[in-house]
Image 1 (cartoon, one colour):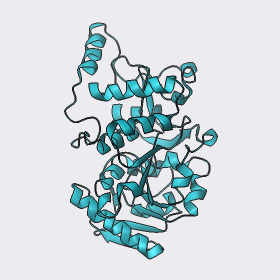
Image 2 (image 1 turned 90 degrees about the vertical axis):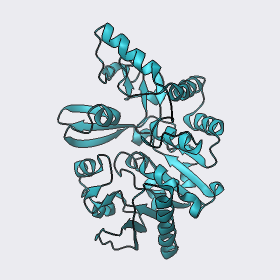
Image 3 (image 1 turned 45 degrees about the horizontal axis):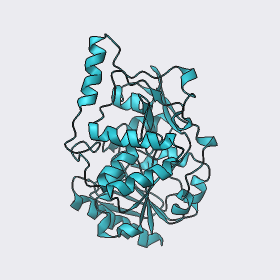
Image 4 (image 1 turned 135 degrees about the vertical axis):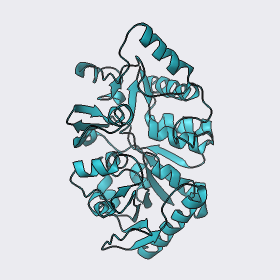
Length: 330
């Protein structure tokens, strides 16, 4: 049995090659929910959805989010109405007193749907409508995720990291922003001064998460701060990882991040923005998989290979390197 910690696109790309070593029945994936938001009253869980769509064979693999071939009529209509009514179309974080109104799971991450700042497809929106309705009927995020995974025919076990609100908030020189506002609306431009996982100290890992983390754990080449950090901030998770075998794949080649704002965010939290910084980000890691062109050294077993993930064949190669690292620390 093996558990992947997933956020962003790095770990889902890695999962494309998981079959080179593991069967679906052996795999559990714990997904980041710190990036979740409520947008126009709908609860959106981007990192969970990427895994749902990937497992269901409908993921848009050019963007690595959303559903392949989806239409965007509702999103377009929202912008048409906003333009005709001269309404603001950027991200509109609801007032502070509204952030703790409504469904508890959406705390500190509630946005207006006017002029929808995230592009959501029509079939994609149907998932959010279903999720939100089931949550409002009293189901937990874990239960809803299981229902959606069954609907999409996902063969691995998929768990959200928590059924409680944990919001990834980015403190910048331009003010406080939710991660989605920082990255999607502002393209990661504002200078980051700190990163906060609001609610994490009072949150609990979702049912099954700590049990899954007692197996061999693989941390894919996801952003260590906002893709993996929210999970690590939950009570009991760091302890669980210290007590099991953990293999981490670098999202860097030296000081160059493969994608996203990993470097800026690592710097903001006091970690070296490079492969070497993984020793700080993942002190519990037993072994690392890094790129063959990366000259970083660790005091733990390290396997080198080409860690680019442009194809299923690439992913299978990295999975085999992970298995080699696992054998060294077993």
